[in-house]
Image (cartoon, rainbow, N blue to C red; front, side, top):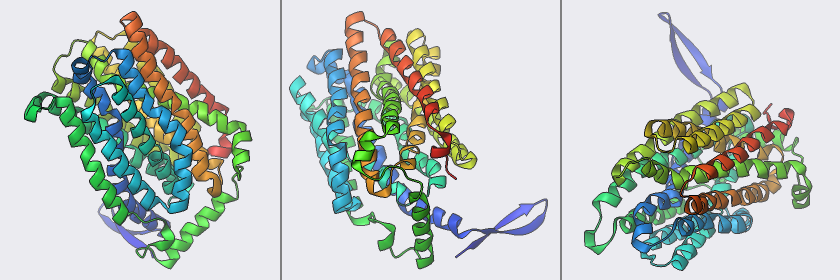
Length: 440
């Protein structure tokens, strides 16, 4: 049923009808997005807090930059291996139960990081954390694609993925405060308290998901029959234009492999920002953990605004390619400048802001492309495959930066090389046909 909105224009009262589609869209957002946003915020926080832990953890345990980079990136090796199987299970048992199970599992793994004493323990827990998280992000993407139509999806995905920069905004200052102020409390180091306080809440959130998240729109009682029919019609319209309807077709389609390459570029940037930004800021001369945490939040704050603005622009203009290419080129430019001016805190921070805006905006914009090719039956498998293979880059970038830092005592050359690959990924976006990926 439609509702009416009141508009005041030059002192004249007018009534503008709100369409049933708009009313449905708003209700879905308020019913689904808040819980999913909080869950993803903790998911990303538990993924990147190792970047803040490094400031104390590596010194306490004697870990080299190479050990740290390998452990930080190992998460994405298991993420690659278990992403597809996890999404297949999600399709069989339902999103509610499977996502709840994953969250409880990764909450336990993240909390257990406080017990790490050796490189092997560090590697093992990071690997297991990747196993637990492998199905969460691609699973939620499948979930959103089954609730929201293509012409609304960019801004919805951006609203969900805003948890990525929000994790930096909240996690940076909070992690820095914990590292500095919880040091030696109850005979535990600051980094141990950080893993405990940021990992344990996920277990509780998993139980909330089990109770509150609906599996699909057909089973909820807060949608009318007319609204459910609107959603069915949207799904049927989109299915008619899908090219990939089997797993064999996924592997044979050249555009799928192009998507893997583009997503690899996105994840190269994410790996640098997530795992090395605190270290880059510290290298510029900033010494206090709490100050580093606060400065780390600034680029993410700009990233939040950029994601929402670009997502709305993409849906309004019904354009996908340039809204992804542009942010990737921004990320490449910002990362290059960070390598060139690594000891000037003002230019470094400006560079990190540009890089963070680019990479965080590219993440939700990229995920508008795969559903344009994949049928609903292959959506879970296809998204998980692209996510899993592309995430290998998130292993390579932190490891490569750590190895280069140990070998050359500088991160600059590594940043230049990775920025070049990110820029190539941005240009590759323009090879995808606009008519295929732009919503009608």
